Image 1 (cartoon, rainbow, N blue to C red):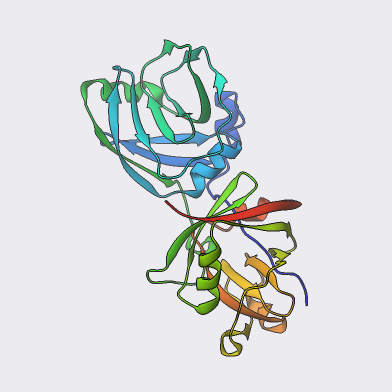
Image 2 (image 1 turned 30 degrees about the vertical axis):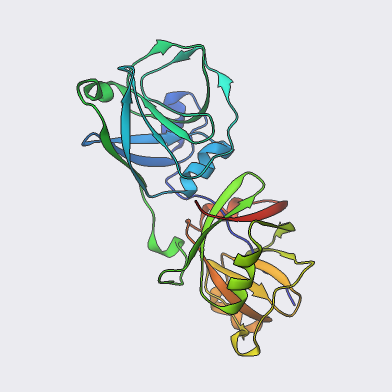
Amino acid sequence: MKTTFLVLALTALFCAAAAAETGGDHKDIVTMTIGGSEHQLWLENSAAARAFAAMLPLSAKMSELNGNEKYVYLDTALPAAPQKVRRVSAGDVMLFGDNCLVVFYKSFDTPYSYTRIGRVADPDKLAGLSRKGDVSASFTYAERPKAEMAGRVIEGGTKVNIWFDDVLVPATLNGGATAKALIARLPCTIGTVSRYEFDACGPMSDPLPWNEADARPGWKNGDVNFAVDGNWFTILFGNEENSAGYGRQVNMGKVDCPLSVLRGLKGSYTVRIELAR
């Protein structure tokens, strides 16, 4: 059987010109709406920013603090890499600790350490936040084509986080027997999962149970599957149109993040799965 693929992470517009203007390696653009005002947020090329992007779309109530920032505690911890920034600039979007997202609307010196998430393109337009208390905020991709999302629809299901080392892939598992057996093991580590042409997959030392009636050839892009012919955990991101020619698989769910950037995975990863908080 040909190995199957595992997906991950975020999609957005690549904007080299915007990156050049800011002098940073900003790769992905997110639309941030905060306090009724819309802004472009250029994400850092980092593990924390990629994990944040995998959570989108995100809506939250952000609290006021110190007359210079709005903050919210995320449900999921991100892979933080804090540094002493010495000075915060208006328009910085950073992580305090591993789950406190902060949008700064004023510049000031600071002794604290933060992990950079991104930079607002028009920081001067954030000044109006100083006249507001707690505000509503939302973060969405500037562009997210439907074709780049998982092709399968699951009503209800169990939300999980699949980590490729420090890269987050949120997913929804269905109510099938094989998916339930996986959920019962959580949190668990799959072991080594490698990225191939249109999938990422890895063998399971302790195979999951499956029913003959649930094992079928083929997949939909974005599927989270158990490949029964080799006891492989697998996530697929391409070649759906030719997938019927491959070995039998039991569908366990689908990824909830865009597929296009998931194709940027390279090499092998230690994959762990946990229930989403």
